[in-house]
Length: 319
Image (cartoon, rainbow, N blue to C red; front, side, top):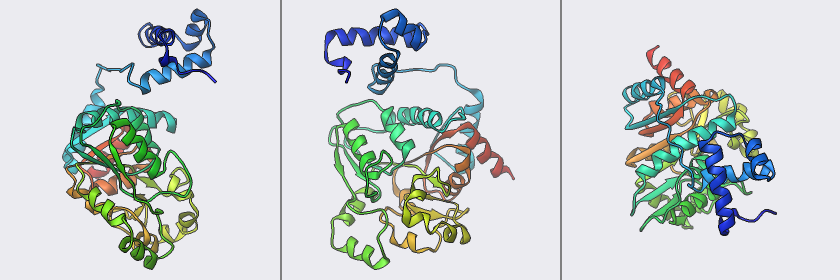
């Protein structure tokens, strides 16, 4: 196992050399490997760490005019406070990293001392948190917006909120419940006789909410859990096109009438409207319809997405 390169002076010098060669000189990882006499895998690992821990910050000063134009159009069409549009990528993982980078920059500006930040779940949110600078938020807190899965995952609400709290040096409040209860009755009992209601009330008073969304394909993690997967045909039959915070919506952004929506442990999407800065971070053309539904319903006032989705949203608004 490799030691953490940042824990010793020699390691710091190696990190600095790799930073200069890779991010400034433009050498490939193989060229750096050959020049420094170390394994390419080690170069790859260190180059990634340099971005993740804030040692290297990439400042792109060549704005894409097409993206800027789309940002302004989306602000006007949906009445949004802030929009960030990044170029589209063919690979989902690459797209998440690019969206995460833009979202991380936006969050670094929005999040201030003394604030409460509420957060959902998802791989894009996790990617966004990884791009944020580590700091010690004074009198700050992080609170989960929804229940979690029964197994660990970077998309799980517990892991995402913990990761954000660690990045911000803030206290963390969890919704200690599953995302879906077995029945409507068990949900009511859980809300009445546990601390879940108190955590949800804290989330409603948050200053910044960070959420993602998913469609009904297997690309969305939520659709792969048994309680949802077995009911996907029912959800589609009644017009559901995707979800936000575990609540399934139709094309107009209304919650569909289904038992899953009545047994979900999460903040209702409509409650996001009262939060000063509510940010939807999501991309991929397959999510365009659910993103449009969320924006049309006015659940969020900020958006970070990719160029292909932005173009589709603007085009649909003009039809």
